[in-house]
Length: 459
Picture 1 (cartoon, one colour):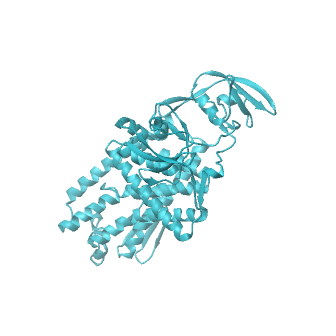
Picture 2: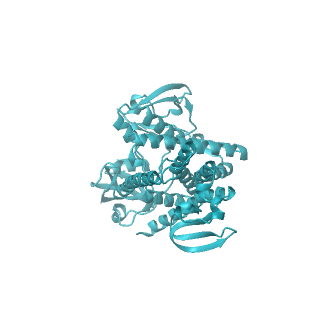
Picture 3: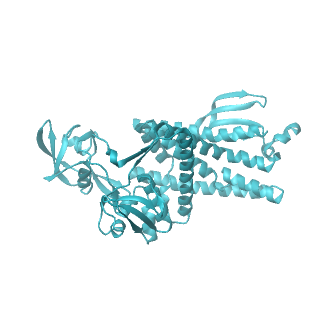
C-alpha cells in the first residue's frame, strides 16, 4: 500500500470515528435522559484499547481496536438476566415512545451535526456560487436538440430557480432520473430568457446519465470554464511525460504540429489518442523544442482514454462576473444550513428509491474504498473541503440508518411501532427472521458497493 493510501486511510478513520461517535452519542444522550440504563458506550469494535468505568450506573466507556463503527449497549432482559430492581430501566420495559426516541436520536444527531457544520461554514464564508453558463455543446445530443447554446445561462429547472452550477447538477439528476425531461429557463447573452426542454426518453440512457461523472457527457454539454494555461505543474514519476523529459514549468504549445491554446485543449487531444506516438512541442526558458512520446492509456467508466500523466500548474479561477457571493448573518446562515441539509436528504431519498426501481445506476453505491479516497482527497484540498465531505457523509449516515431494515435503527423503529399498535412485541421468531433478512439486504448492498469500489480501482 502506497503512502498516499495510508494517508487516505487515516482520514477515512478520522471521519468514520467522528461521525459514528456523534451517532452513538445521540443514542446514549437520549437514553440517559429518559431513564434507560446504559451499560457500554463503545467507539469501534473488538478488543478494548482504552476503557473507563464511571457514573452511578458504572457505564463502560470504550475505545476499541477496530475503528469502523461503534455501539451503545443498553440494559436488556433479552440479552441476560436483569435484577428485579432494575427491570424498569431495561430497554423492553420502557414505553414504546421512549424506545423510538432513543432509536431516532442517532440519525437525528447526524443530521444536527451536519447542520451545525454547514451553519459554521456558511456563517464564516457566506455562499459563493458559480453561474451555470453553458460552454461547449456537442451536435446530435439532448443538449443540442434542446437548442442550448454556448454562453446561455441556466436560471431555472422545472420552474425552480437555481443559484449556480451545483443546483443545476442536482436539479438535472432529480428531473431526468424521474420523468426523463427537464424544463429549463435559460438567459441569453442579450439578457432575454426563453424555455428549453432537455429530454432523454430512453430508460437505459437515463440510467447511464446517473452514473458518476457521466451526466454532462450524456447530455452533450459542459459548463463554461476559464482557460487554464497548458503549463505543466506536476509530472508523474515513470509516466510518459517524465520518460520523454518534460518538466514542471514547461508550456505545451503543440501536439503533432496542432497548436495547443490551453490545458483543456491538451487534455482533449491526448485523451482521444491512447497508445499513439505523438510529437509534443513545448517551450522552456523561452526556447521551443519537441519530444516524441507514446501516450499512455487509462480506463474511465468503461472507456479507454489517453494519458501523459501531467497536471496543470494553475487551478481554475473564475472571473468576478461569473461568481455570486452572499454574506449571511448567524440567523440567516442557520436557516440556509437547515434548508441545504433538508434538500440534500430529500434528493438522496429520491435517488435511492429510484435506484431500487432501476431508474438510477447502482454504480452510485460507494463502499469503504471510495469513501476513503474521497476522505483523503477532501482533506488534501483543505479544511473547507473536508468539512463539506463530513456534512455529506453525516447526512448519508443519518438517512441510511432510517431505512426500514431490521438491523438498522429504522427497522427497529418499525418493530416498536408494530408493538405499539398490537399491544405486544413481535415473537422472537419473527424478530430473528427480520434480523436475518436485514443482514442479507445489507450484505447485498455492501457487495454491490464493494464491487463498484474494486471496479473503479481496476478501471
